[in-house]
Structure formats: C-alpha cells, structure tokens
Image (tube, rainbow, N blue to C red; front, side, top):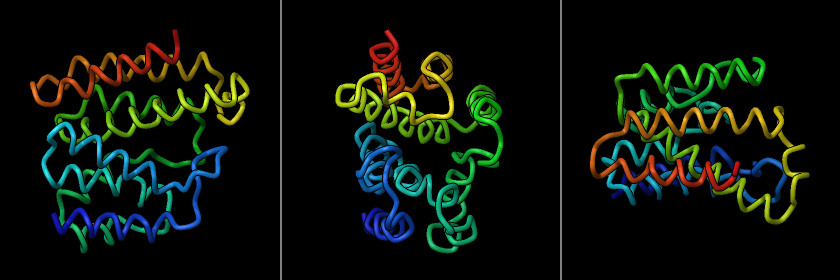
Length: 183
C-alpha cells in the first residue's frame, strides 16, 4: 500500500501545474483515476502503480530511470510501454503505433494499463461533450470520425485480448463507453 502513496506523491509532483486538455481540471486527476480503475479491477500492485505513473515519462521531465530507481524494473517497463512515441509525430502515426502495440504485445498487464488509460479518457470525453457540445472536438488534433476509428479499434482489441475473468469487465466497460460516445 505504501507504494501507492509513493506513486501518488511522485506523480503529483511531476504533473504539478498541468491541466487536462481544454479544461482547468488538474492533470493529476487522470493518472489517479487510471490507478483507481486498475485497483477496482484487481490488477496487481505494480500495475496499479504503473497506472498512476503512466504519463510521468511521456508528459513531464521525469525519466524512465527515475521511475526505475524509485519503483523498480517492472513498473518502469509498464510506464515506458504505455507511452506514445515522439509527440512531434503526426496524430495518426502515434495512434497507429498504439494500436499496433495493443495488437502485438504479449504483456497483458501493459494492455490493462492502456485500457484503463483509454477508459478514463473516454469517460472524460463523454462528460466534456455534455458540457461543451460538439465544440469539444475542436480541442483535438483529429476530428471526431478519426477519434471514433481509433477508440473503436482499441475497444475491439481489448475485448479480444483481455480474457482473464477478473479483467475482462474492464475491456467490456471501455467498449460500452466508446459505443456510447460515438453512437
């Protein structure tokens, strides 16, 4: 349990001053929600910790070595795996990379982190759509149709690949949320 608190502390320091895209919501809410989803679906401690830390290397000055020294090799491996490649790359290229990783990885725990991350994103998108309407889509680098392609593709992959009885409901929840958003 202490590792959870250490992860929350580290992630909070790393994400200080950041907000969710197009909102005033502190960014730290997202990684904490990802960790909560993973804990709810009975993921192992290292997976929950990786969920809390999943954006620290991608979106802050923290490095994989920082995560490795503080949380160990497995957490560092999951955090590194969950990140997108070069942020300067085109949107479609980054999303195709994520889809390919989800299709090909043998690491089911990495799929859990990815699925929980995307589920929290979808839940936020649904809430934002209720508040801002279709203007919400203007905050993103790709239009609604391309977002639908991306999330639906991932939903199908997660449903197919996350088969364990304790964890499959996470994939089912993501699939339901995606279909509700893009119906």
